[in-house]
Image (cartoon, rainbow, N blue to C red; front, side, top):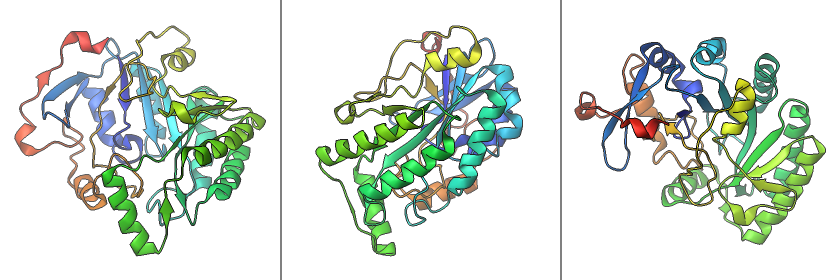
Length: 307
């Protein structure tokens, strides 16, 4: 079983203490966000083949990554975008993120991390030419550090539109969702920049936007985990949406719990709710966050889902 920690929230940045306690305990509990069922997920060396850590700030977990590796090898999907504060209210500065990403790869090897530049959002503060320059500057800083960059273009879900409109009204920004030909033109330029800096260019779950020189992304990647581990880690392809090529995994996060304040985030319906839930989080609890009525009703996940 590959454990995803987590595309629903930033566990390394905000919930590192909880994650480490759950590793020590050997399990955590999660809630199905659609049906409300609860599950116990084992987190032991004999059940976990690898971890995929999703973060914008590895620093809170960095001193204890050896404890993670003692259970299973890990790969970090590390987002660095350098957007204006009107779009990312509480992320760490891009320079700090770049320095931390460099340090991570020096410590654990060049294949341990993937740079994510996603989602790409078009606003009057971040037009296409701004992205070209910003992406190139970050790529220069990370040349020789990572071998892959993953991008996506913002999905404008209903909740995303609502959050963008609130942010636009507050900050006097305008945003738009351009046609696909404009997106693919930008993607082609970014793919060229990535290649110039020794990085493979991958597009996450948007096959129709993959430019020449790019390829679809596999964010949960058993092959990369295998390279880090020095042994074969097998898992079937089982994406969680259209065009997703990820290998099968179990995610241990929870929606509406990340207080980074990114206005485009698909995992947060309400930034205020995310902040409240973060404040209410119990680092000693079995769930990252769960309604009180569900905290004692977890049932063990069927064994055939683990592998």
